[in-house]
Length: 407
Image 1: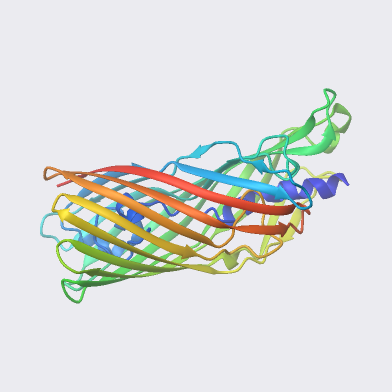
Image 2: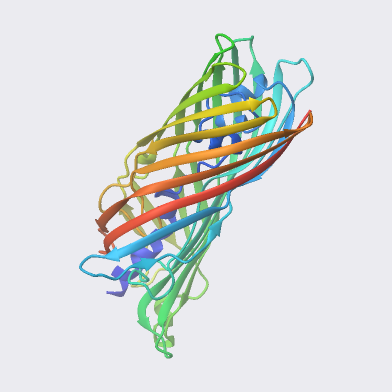
């Protein structure tokens, strides 16, 4: 019984990277336009959206931004009128980009630091699913040096190397009673690293149309010597060794994006992005523990996730040259099959709506703000490992702000 209850706890860290935790908050101009940007030449965020567009930027650019993310989810257990809500927590995905090249040169170099995967959720210690999850804090931070070259007026291309640092801190209750009557606790903390790459090409046949194609590779994050911490009754301490460690390899999926941009005139800009994410890299999750007991053994768990896509559109309107209004939307298909939905990421098909504004101060400074709303479809599920059964209803809110200096 103890082993059956403990194994899902040990599996949780890898699941968290996979289920609906891809963060698409990588530039305020792009967020405002429905998170499009693959075929656009707007600012230094092209380091991520399309390295091929970096060399086409008319100026050098340095910028930083943040998009506080509020995850609002409720769970209604099957056969019950009760409703459990997550506690109010705010995750802080951030971006920082810099692009530089000599005036008149056909090349530019850039660097980006951004958070493409992450999440922060806290269900508390008294809800029905506390033996599956109490809280989670997850971050994956990518650092991407980039080089881009403009072949001619129509074509440019670029590529970047990606270094990832991933961090996870998960807590859950164990169905064991402490001397004070509270539940025993498990906490999993670890840091991992991995490598990948990002490449893209931009084609602009004329002054109105632009086309972009970009590929962000899979990044396998390897966690070595993660801490497995347990607070259990003294009589069971031998089954939960103090100072125990775990290791795992976690693949973060690749993304392929195709974009189209159309500039109607000096006032209107339109964009379309189609993306395909290879979530199917999650066929199984394997964990190796430094110390095994009859309760805690190395594990192999099938996941069988599926690839998924999204479509997003956006528009920008400039009533005057130094002021922009933006809006957009999109639809994202879930990658999580029935039976694998968890409270770490109660994923389902989702609708997103965005808006944004931008203001240019003088010749050098830009301030941009955005707002993203995601409506995740209600989903009734019974998890095949934990047997937690019920309906999840989730909304996501993310305002954002960035400041840029161009020269």
